[in-house]
Length: 433
Image (tube, rainbow, N blue to C red):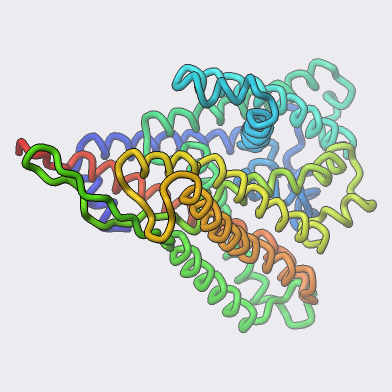
């Protein structure tokens, strides 16, 4: 990975892309330090210190700590992620949107992106209003803003404009930088919390043995080794692929012979990357988020949908499997692949071209997608189960660890892969060279 970055830095155009990406991420982190007016930040942080293992703690991790400080980027990319989920599901349910996304080409994709932006602003308004009601109900506003309509409008619009600005920053990274912009922003948010999490763990380890927050040294060592094992597993599965053999028939055109060679059709085990995790997390946290924003931090919703609960883990796992299949269906079309093979004189040994080939590819796709979805689900859910059954309060925050590691490592691998593709494109020598 370091060698890839070093080689990319030597290419002027890629160096500019890397610097542009780092500049946008620096602006994002700067925005995370700018507080919204009329909010008592100290009181809000005290309130959040008691809720680190709830859905609000999850939102705080995903925003890089901005949520607990009520900064202009407090909502982070959650409104955009939720809007993307809704629009992509509607593209399947509504024929007009499906035709727009598939048949109208680049123009149709631009229209879908525009609809997603409007939906992001609408969801940002709703979440901004919910966050305002949360801090108002718990008396976290400054005294002069407690019953002021003007202050409410300023706070809600600031949160909304912050989420819209993050969406724009992400699009700039995608267009002019390296990698997927939204994933990079989420990556930066989670990474920024790692030093604090490590410092907290070491502090808990140094506490007296009778302290309820004390963390045994062997438990800390087990957590480090577990994180390293998860990273190795993620890298291994991300590079894993099923190779389907393909043979091209010989063709004679004039005096030349074409085809006759054997190759393979690569199908990645984890085809959808980290997107199922990000989307599943957003959906699974919706009920508890609504309850928290309405001021209800106790009750059956928080019991069932708390980030350490068994029902939350089950729903989270099922959503990961659903979105893994959803994304593999969008990204890989077996019928189209089978038709392309047939047009080019290729076939899979043992299967006739056309429908039998597409059915075989579909079966293989279903199997490897299930394996990839279960891998994502297990890595994300096992820390939740450990936190649920843990007797040490210092371990209860581990439930967010598996998800964070998957996102960070997955985004890092995707970014390195994008850099390698850019370098390959620029270093390619054609037949005229």
